[in-house]
Length: 125
Image 1 (cartoon, rainbow, N blue to C red):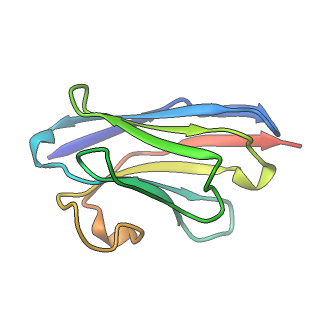
Image 2: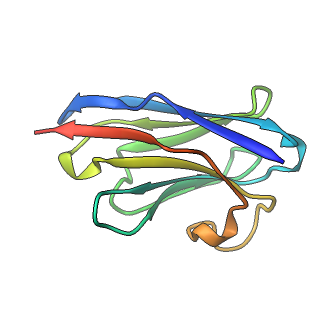
């Protein structure tokens, strides 16, 4: 089994920045791609970004391109989400997810076998 624990959420003003971290433990040798998703109140969960195991390939939702950056430190089994120029519409619970594969539709939640408990990000206007 794999456990994922997110941290770094909080309250920030519009235009500000936050960095989320997701630490993996357990059978981490099996992990490949990692992703971030978010869910705002009354809305469906949506893809934010993903990074393959090597860290050399990333993908982002159009709504966050140019503002958010995903990175990972495989030695620490940790993936990060740097969020800059935050907007009120970025307010959501952010979830980290881990896949056993580096391939497939990494924008889809079904590709991920493990999920964190989520961390709240609130952006005030």
